[in-house]
Image (cartoon, rainbow, N blue to C red; front, side, top):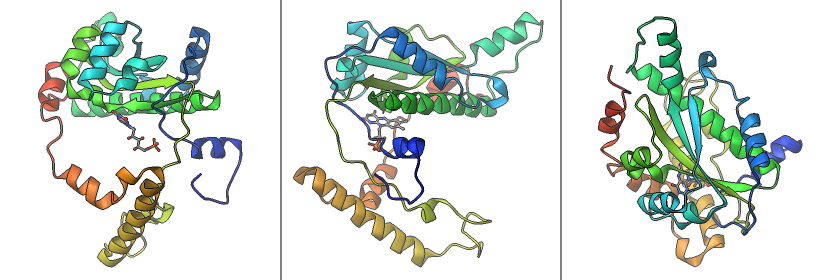
Length: 258
Ligand SMILES: Cc1cc2nc3c(=O)[nH]c(=O)nc-3n(C[C@H](O)[C@H](O)[C@H](O)COP(=O)(O)O)c2cc1C
């Protein structure tokens, strides 16, 4: 667990998070799923818009197609539950129309609102699921081919699939992955801390420290995974163009036009 002296049941449970990709052959009943979603919906929501829809994908063929296009990621087909989280402005558009108001759509701000709302809901759902002994993993891989996902799941314009989530009873207990030290992400008064200026030396030493921490973690997990510095692997990732079709896809769905 990430070390910090502050502790209570909720904090400990949040700190025990690890992504789960192998599940027991035990179903998650529909009352449990709806109870978790109902708790997840209590997340804060921008302007109370609740700009999301979750699709519980049960059709085995659709699950296999999505598992393939996402990687392949076999756990998408095998997990007891697979959900697709959509950012969804359709209800807002209908609300405006029902009052004779021409809806303003396509603004970048609405893309942020709907995506943030969806992410807050999903993270709440992950925590809720973990609190009842389930585990899971987010699946951003569905954005490899969002058009096919949208077609398979009949997702209309003014909505788009943001990510998926596998859920089930864990059949593995991977070691918890370290996060940056708090000082690296919590700054006082300005982005750079109290001096208001970047400190490249501090950045370098923070990064080197985290690289060796993460390397040790991967070495413990598997010989195959050793020598995976955070800065090297994420640096390489940042040097690649990822999913270049996303802007066109969002525009086609009616998002991010203005
Ligand atoms: C939006 C999002 C998308 C992700 N997509 C995938 C994915 O497609 N496949 C996967 O195996 N893990 C995926 N992950 C899981 C991350 O790799 C994982 O959370 C991260 O490496 C930290 O590990 P941990 O969750 O075990 O602490 C995703 C996580 C997030 C938040």
